[in-house]
Image (cartoon, rainbow, N blue to C red; front, side, top):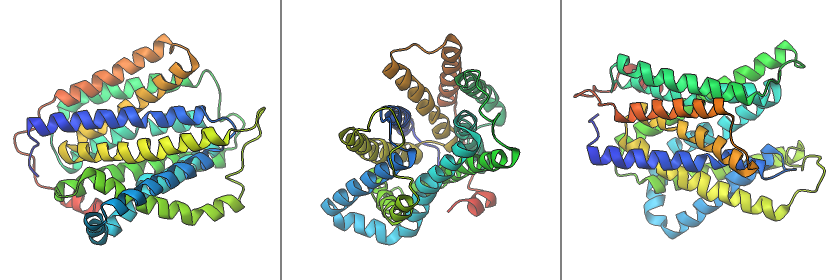
Length: 330
């Protein structure tokens, strides 16, 4: 595995940062949709992702059909781990242990991707990662703890469900960590695969799985609007899920594929933190509020850690993939 050139690193960093800025909209859009359940919003998002992928597949069918025929199993695995199962475990965790605790655990995702990526394919000396990882971890703790707002989310929950919820969120982190690293490895081994085309193929799998699961979600009442003071707007819902499916899912995943193919996993993983900062920023902007000073300090620590990693120089020779890497990834 060769080290990326300066031009590739710059392009990958820009693409990863742009993906994070777009992914941050996933924090904001559900806030703008009162009355709609998270499952309904997510189903709409992934159906829209699948629909735009079908359109793009039809427009460029020959090349994408060859890509699908060769790698349909990998695409299906990534659709499940990076989208469907990841979100399912996250929803279960939020319901059982509470959103504040779940958000703290999910906040560990960039760090797990960065550190495990460096363990599987050593690109940086560990001592060079201590400071940026510490800054990011401290920033994530400050931001999420302050977001709790003094609440005690697990006070009215029994121990059993709370433990199951925590395990579900940890499972979501592990799934997306595997997806992020396996996707990066796949793209580095297949430089002929375009980022946009690969996003389209994964979108086909995501849409198909969502469509198959839709009857179960409907029969279990997960798609019904939530009780609220005002009826939910169908027009706003349709616009929102289109933005989520086309922009947040397809476009951001395409950009992330560019970053994953051009950057070491450690750098790409740290860039995921931009999603967290952007998401909080969008929500505060929509509310017309400034974040608390403590959270601003936390955001600054996160971004400082990300910048330090981006500026790090990789070791001169990036070693070949270890047996552990080949065992864990596709």
